Image (cartoon, rainbow, N blue to C red; front, side, top):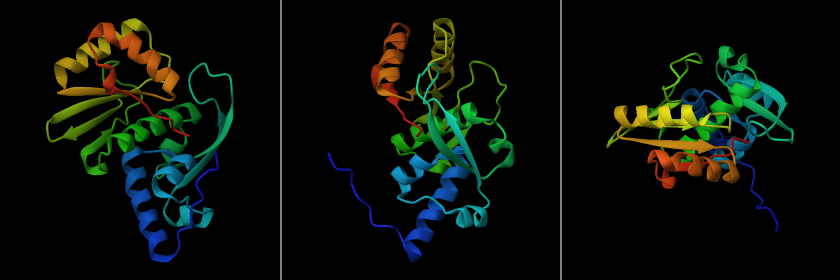
Length: 195
């Protein structure tokens, strides 16, 4: 199957896409080069990234916890402290950001939790929907069954709903199976690839 060829964005169309990227990355804290192409059709050049105040972090890492393959990736962030978090945490933030894009949530209705050391039952992000707040949680495959249960139960008490994400469909299917005994409907578990 041939991949879809895109016409490069130019002029005002490119500037508008870069502005949308700036707003998205301020909300999501970090997104990968692949996400920028997928959702905005453009990746800032080094000069554009510098002009936008973005830090570019290049890394080689696996797509998920326990994965056996490595991939080269570039992450974009407007915050130096985020750029210094390291590739696994940038991967996690990009996964949470992918969930926002998949759910179609505008940046103004979303808050990514910036506290890397927080209560284990705190979600990774909050979606302030018209129905009320939703907990957003991204699991790259490292959570124990006990922790999953505590999070699902705590989120059920504090939020009108919860969405979970995983980096691949295989990981999402496994997560659906693991969360089902705790009452979470599989529709609320998304495959959210960050690359």
